[in-house]
Image: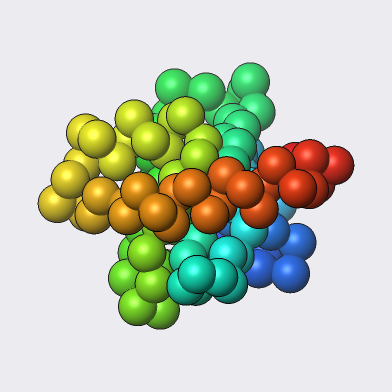
Length: 114
């Protein structure tokens, strides 16, 4: 297996895993600004040729690591990230329900984005 690198494309709203020069997977997310700043993952995709290699888990882990470095919470709306967080509570603090509600409202007002 070739080495996977992860790059944060904040402007594009993607955390991307690369295998060589090829995008192997991604988490699509947005930055919520109110009621407080948070990273909100909404969708995780792993390309079929790269399934079963732990890429989705690596992306989720890195998203939480970025949030920790920035001192912001993660408000996961992506079903995969929600399940990953439940399995890794030591790395993924539980999101404030009010923050999750605010993220859902933000997303509902912009359905064309995701």
